Each structure stands twice: as C-alpha cells, then as structure tokens.
Image (tube, rainbow, N blue to C red; front, side, top):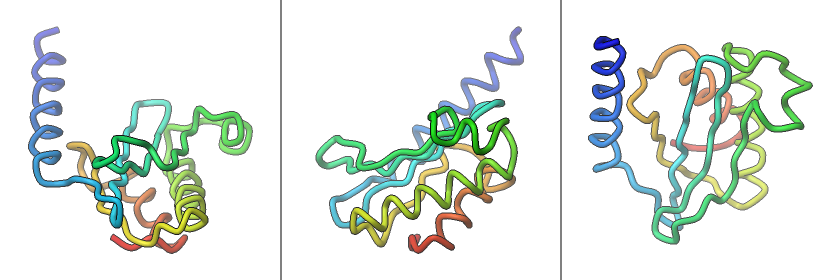
Length: 122
C-alpha cells in the first residue's frame, strides 16, 4: 500500500513540475495526454480561456467499437490520428505537448507520432 502512495505522489509532483512550464495559449494550445491501464485520452486545451477545444478518448462511443481494448499502442495511434484531424479542422496547426509526468515512451509516444502524422506540429 505504501509503495502505491509513493508512486502516485511522485507522478503528481512530475505533473506539477511540467505544468509550470507548459501552458496553452490561443495561438498554440496544449495537447494533454492522460492514460490509465485500460484507456487513453487526449485533449487540446486553451489555458488562457480555460476551455477544451477538442478531445478524443478510447472511452467515447465512436472509438469504443473501433479499437476494442483501449490500453495498447494501436488504440493510442488511432486516438492521436483522430485528434490531429479534429484539431486541423478547427484551424489548429501548432500545439505544445503535455505528457503529464509520463515517460515519452509506448502509448504516449505512439499518440504523439500519430498526431504529428495527422498534421499537428510540436
């Protein structure tokens, strides 16, 4: 039990440290990636206005049937591609990437690369 609390505390500390430097502006919003064991979610956020411009998750109805299990690299690629397409339709070309304290590896990396292939720059 103690080990899980320490891991959660360290993750929260990394998240706070990253958020001190990464902020979303109207011309360059923040792409925040959240993941759990079963799902992955990505949002494009304008921090100045305090609003989410677009979001994609493996929990949404449109992706639940398409990907099945949302806790793998294949699902992360689909989420990244769809988010990149939605952001481009809204006229968003550049974002700053917020990995929320996670390593740039595995599902987070797959989502980022798929979003880049869909046309987002970061």
